[in-house]
Image (cartoon, rainbow, N blue to C red; front, side, top):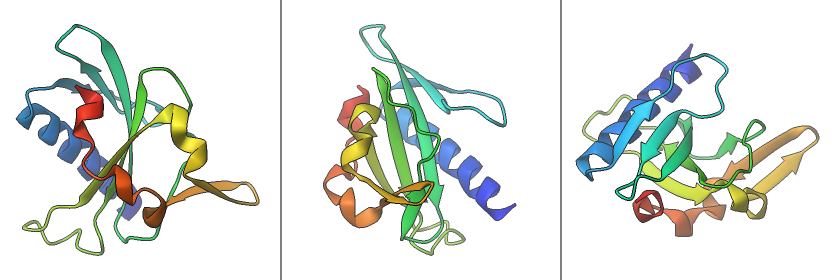
Length: 128
């Protein structure tokens, strides 16, 4: 249940951050969804966003990430401070078409490590 709560908290955190930047966004509903948030840009263009979250700071599973045009991934890393509501998580945003250059594979599992996405921190402009 902890990972589910982490994911839900991260989705609402991201939606809050988007609205604070005047970006119109909507959370999609469902248990097995590949798109967590739909975004409408100021030009009326539709983007989609997949949110991946972790309470610690090591790696995030990306097995269900789809490479698609106008589709992005937001990695939310709480750095072992999930319960500390006065501490914001780190947010890294990448285009889904670039996922391969960040991925590490272990048998059937694909992961992204924080160290591989450090240059993508707070790239909110990708979503505008």
